[in-house]
Length: 367
Ligand code: SF4
Image 1 (cartoon, rainbow, N blue to C red):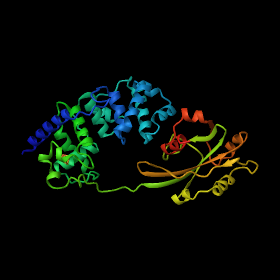
Image 2: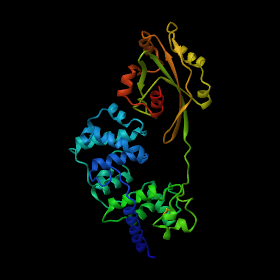
Image 3: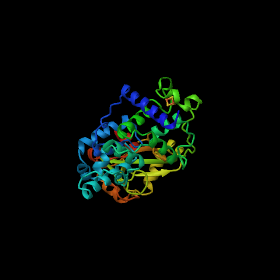
Image 4: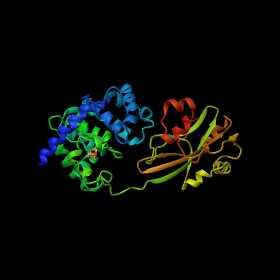
């Protein structure tokens, strides 16, 4: 079969498959660039099931770009809390402000202008351009890479430097130029629900007749990925210095993980065993290094078991120790803490107004 015929056959098969297997999602078919952009940013690195309530929450709180631009950073992070990868939220905020203030609230409608927005890469730009404006740009996400690699038998590792051009050329050739938005959605849905990373539904696949991976026994091994990046591990002991309803916390401002989110005073160690064996004596030792001797805790709770959060390039583990003081001591403590920026807040203020990293939120909401 000639290549063009193969592509035409593939389009026919998959369009027919999509009619038989609809995948309704709230942002599908809505040709409003703000909604499309919002859903695409939320879905970067996030499963659809996890992203769905956030999309609805954002749309309810901020129905327009201007509403999103007006949020304070704390309000933004509170809405985003639990979704992770906070740089996405920061970029989204900057873009909303740019559109509201510099573009009179009008979302750009040309691919190059969409691609130039902060936080919008090739994939997101193609998604917005095709879904919202029906421009002929093929999306290339993990699902599309997998479908192309398997169906066409492409063995170039998807993280190789030459891969993007090779797969993009294929994706563009396969694109249904009359209905690029609908076609992109079909490719992504097919990869997400049929040609899945594990246990793809090959037995019932509309492409099985011409699938190279299936006929050559490479379904399990494609697509190829050459490098596996090791994640660096970090270990924290958090101290909840409290009195009645008040807790001492601060916002992380350093260019590090969780910038802009809130945390309790902490110390960082270099191994998990330090967390596993953390005891009251060590907590007292830490207090002694900075706490004036006339201030004594009323009670020190044992450290919790380690909790863990996986970030893009990090695995973070932490234990939490609660230390109770007399109420008049909290202000003195604030003056002596070894690092700056801490304030005392009530549990109610903490719960309603600020965003913690997922790991700390897990501890706070388990209380
Ligand atoms: S036959 Fe299997 S591997 Fe090939 S496209 Fe279909 S689901 Fe994917």
